[in-house]
Image 1 (tube, rainbow, N blue to C red):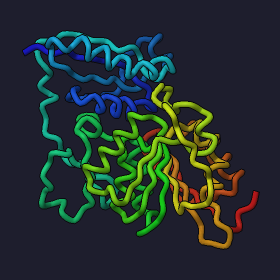
Image 2 (image 1 turned 180 degrees about the vertical axis):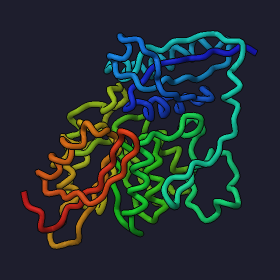
Image 3 (image 1 turned 135 degrees about the vertical axis):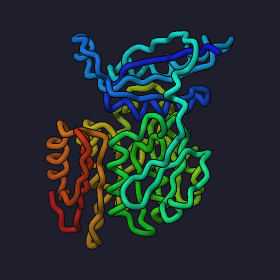
Image 4 (image 1 turned 90 degrees about the vertical axis):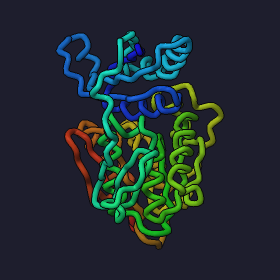
Length: 322
């Protein structure tokens, strides 16, 4: 039976967000993310790094669903994070998409599974995270997410109070909760909030994670961080020193803006050091982010790298001064 193949080009920053938005529709399938290799000069000037393909049944609902997806992704296109959406009728889906969704191991302890998978005997000792197929399989998790999970694995302790800022698909909130933490998951986009809530329910950690549509401090003044229009009536969380650790997998420019807010959230006079894990950016942003955090009294203690992607762990000690 024929189907419709939809295709767009994306920057590295937007890959995870595109997958999260597509998963929210519940009727796209077999999302495929591949490295962009075209040599067209005009397209390379837009910093495209990936080609994203996905498929719809070719039926009477196809046109309305394409329009809905186009509207959903249009903010990313307006902010030059993706190309326009293209659609083609094809005879059948490529056979290469009909593959088994193998477990994805991250770090020493985590394994990500298709939400419909049965836990396998050889991973019974691992911490299992279950996600919608379209968020993790066929495309693979975004490098920034993988790096953040590896750092969480090393730095989360039982009963920590953690802020997951820009929760997106919810995977980092799930990971932190399964390591024993209590989590407040924030995102200023309603689609991301729904995705996080779905992940929390799928993984049975609803008692450990609270999800809110909100921004932190100065973040509320910046609109939707990914350029979308789904912020609605967003609350502002005032920094008040109530968290032991922040994990923020968001755009590089947001980290530099929020550096003072990170300090206010984590600083506790005469108490133990607090931890900040930042990811979502490549090496081009590393210096500016490190400099902004250093100005606020943060000290770099750990890092993870994959290709051009970087994730950093900083601490803020009670003796840190401005």
